[in-house]
Length: 267
Ligand SMILES: NC(=O)C1=CN([C@@H]2O[C@H](COP(=O)(O)OP(=O)(O)OC[C@H]3O[C@@H](n4cnc5c(N)ncnc54)[C@H](OP(=O)(O)O)[C@@H]3O)[C@@H](O)[C@H]2O)C=CC1
Ligand SMILES: O=C(O)[C@@H]1CCC=N1
Image (cartoon, rainbow, N blue to C red; front, side, top):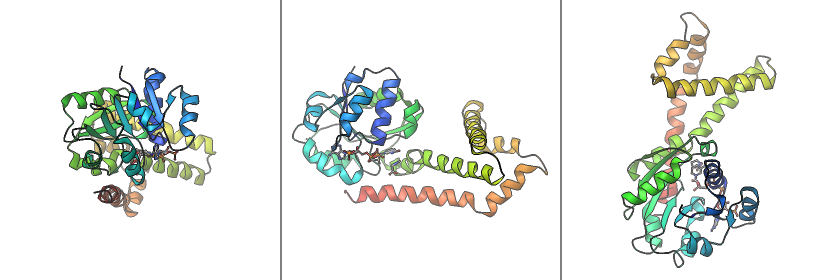
C-alpha cells in the first residue's frame, strides 16, 4: 500500500487520517506535518508518523496538501526542491487551482484537486476530484481508491470546483447550522435540551437515509409529510415568508464566490 503524507494536518487533514485508519489503513503508512507541535500530538493520538516536509517528500508516494489557501505558497516553496519525481500531489485547499501547484513544483508533477468534507471522519465524505494538466487516469484512480475508503468520490472538470466547494465542501456546516436552530426551537417550545437534540438528530438521519435509499425526489418526500390543513404546511409557509430558500441560494452563491476569490489571490 502506498505511503501517504498529509502536509498540513489540521481539521480536514485529521479527518482524513482518522477516516483512513477507521477504514483499516496501517497508521504507520501515514505521515503528517504541521508547523507547530500538532503533528507530534497526532502521532501520539493516531499512531501515524510525524515528519518534516523534506522527510515526507522523501518517503511518500502521495502528498496530500491540507494547509489553508493563505499558507500555500511557503509550503510549495519548501516542497519544490525536495519532491521526488513521480510523487502525486493532492490538494484539498478551497479555491486553489492546480495551475498554482504546477507553477511552483517541478515540470510534469501530477496534481489532483480534491474538495472533500468532514464527514470523512465517519466514512461518509463527499469527495470531488479534478485532474491537473499532468494527472493521468492512473493518478485519478489512485486518488479515487484512497478517498473511496472514507466515502463517495466523483470527478468533475476543475472549472466546477468553486461550486462544489460551496455545496459539499461547506455543506455539512449548513446542515449543522439548521440542526442547531431546530434544537433551539425545541427549547423555545419547552422541551429539555437532550430530548430536543435527540428528536432533531434522529429526524435528520432518518430524512437523509430516506433521500439516499428511496431515490424519491425531495419534493415528493416533503409532500408526503405535508398533510392538508396540517402542521407542516403552517411551518412551510413561515419558511417561505422568511425567505429561507432565497437565503440558501444567496449563501451558497456567496461561498462559491469566496472560493473564486481565494483562488484569484494566488493566480
Ligand atoms: N475544514 C473543512 O471542512 C474543509 C477544509 N478544506 C480545506 O482544507 C484546508 C485546511 O482547512 P482546515 O483543516 O479547516 O484548517 P486548519 O487550520 O485546521 O489546518 C491547517 C493546518 O495546516 C498546517 N500548516 C500550515 N502551514 C504549514 C506548513 N508550511 N507545513 C505544514 N503544515 C502547515 C497548520 O499547522 P499548525 O497547526 O501547526 O498551525 C494546520 O494544522 C483548507 O485549504 C480548506 O480549504 C477542504 C474541505 C473541507
Ligand atoms: O470554509 C472553508 O473555507 C473550507 C472549505 C470548505 C469547507 N471548509
